[in-house]
Image (cartoon, rainbow, N blue to C red; front, side, top):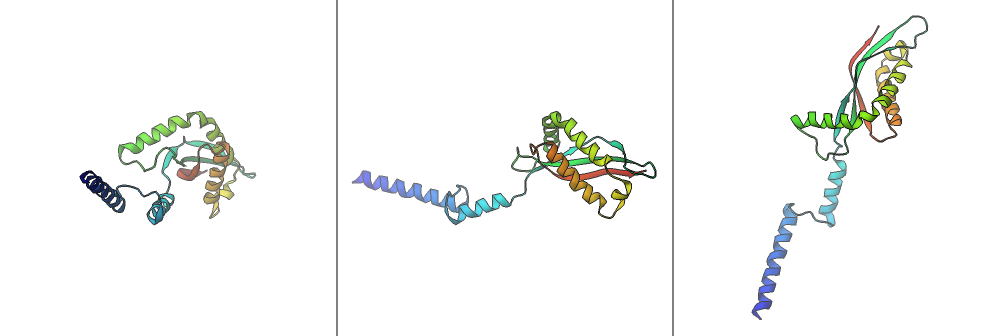
Length: 164
């Protein structure tokens, strides 16, 4: 009889501890509204991204009347599927270095996509009010297509943009 009461007491204590842990959030609940809320929050979290700076380039533009060139430097932003949380401080530089090492085999493909896309534009295309925005979207599409979606570019940032 004492053993039964002891087992019941231990069972109630363990059950109470588990229930309290689940309510406090220490122990994730695998079902019910709390689990659904946790999954929804996980899906709503923006992906971790990494910046991939490219070298400065000068390309001839496709102007017919006169010769123009574009001097541009840009940074591509990719989704970093290896990380769940964005790095902080010195870890950002480490993340960029690690990503760049992983992308080393794709450098020629990326450079070709950027150069051919940029050199297919005229100065009037780029000087229109939405010219740079359209160019950014085209660069994202071309880079993603060239990489066969192995990595996913999500944005382009121009750090230098000069038409002469």
